[in-house]
Picture 1: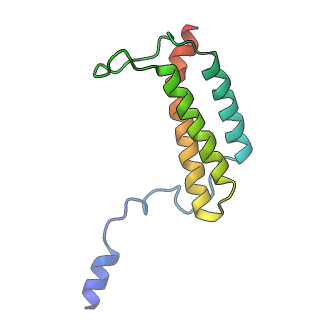
Picture 2 (picture 1 turned 90 degrees about the vertical axis):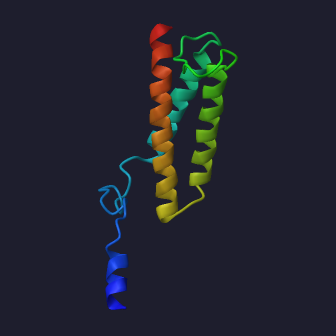
Length: 115
């Protein structure tokens, strides 16, 4: 029985090797809000026909600018929700927000360079 408990404790946990786990995030709520505001401003400047990258499998009826606006609004809501959380739950939401902002910034970069 003791061996079974040891085997369970040795099971691979992908988060146990992540150096970010257990540490406070290195970003603040103010910094995330500033990045989000900058992103909102950049998305508002996009035109419907902006040269954003199109996946080969998607049809052309997809409106990339509208999709980005919806995603930015979703991040805004996550930021609002994070203000009501504490501890590890808040840190997870803030990490998700930071990752989402980085992905959106990467998606918008080609359109703003072309403008």
